[in-house]
Amino acid sequence: MKITNIPRWLFAILLSFMLMLPVSARVFDLPDDPHIGVIGDPDTPFYTHAKQQDTLLDVARRYDIGQNEILLLNPGVDRWLPGIKVKIFIPSSRVLPDTPREGVTLNLPEYRLYYFLPDKKTVATYPVSIGRQDWNTPIGKTRIVQKKANPTWTPPESIKKEHAEKGEPLPDVVPAGPDNPLGLFALRLGIPGYLIHGTNKPYGVGMRVSHGCVRMYPEDIEKLFPEVKVGLPVYIVNQPVKVGWWNKKIYIEVHPQLEGEELPYEQLYENAMELIRKAFFKYNYQAELVVDAASLKKALQEKKGLPVAITKIVSEDEPVEELF
Image (cartoon, rainbow, N blue to C red):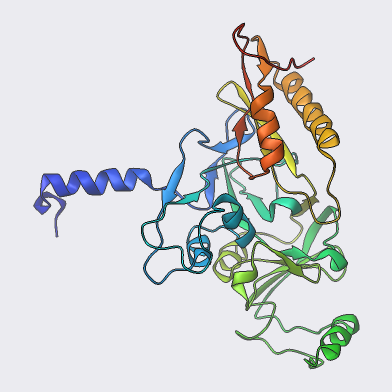
């Protein structure tokens, strides 16, 4: 049907609805200015609704969000029966991790992977699962050393022992296929024994559930796999607090720290202020900016993982926390 055959009133409704949707759930334009650290538009919130048969986890997967993230952002929404009339918040912006804008970055407290495309103009981002507390995903710089489609899995003895103790013995080799815990695609890292791979349990994505490897939704690893090259650098970091400039303001994004690594508020505040000072000097924006103490405190306490503006022009009417 030609677009000219659609009634004007219906076309207007369709157009307005399309404008409400995020351009992409995964790919963002990179700022031309390397000092700008926020992607997307933090000033334009986006909401959606569940379908009749949806759980909140179905909505998370549809918008490429992990389980922990969508629960944190929608605390009043029932995980299993969200309802079709309930507004569900979907993040439309992110503060970039403090790493080189190349290759792949994995930020563990964020449960998220960033892939900086070779055009140096765009970045794709995906939710991931990471190693649980007794099987930590290692931190540091590495690289992709091998790509394998339809991988088999040879469980290490430690994992075989763990499963045997649960009465769930594993074979020496798990064949390739849909029941393989590695999914259909795997990227081997330079750290021996660690992979970025798919999964046969997609609803665990966005949680701390693996034996140290990084799991992705099957549809996400399918997109990432042909894009990345052997030798590509991979930065694995632990940055629960991220800071970046956008629209002449400093934004902070705070995530819950990994279990067992929680800091008292005072230490978290000092760490955040140090990042804010560094961001201010890095960009050297010439304006009488001050930290909005109330906004900063709220972000550090709530830890919702959303970019929050925490600076403003000096005002004599409101209490503020000076940068220096």
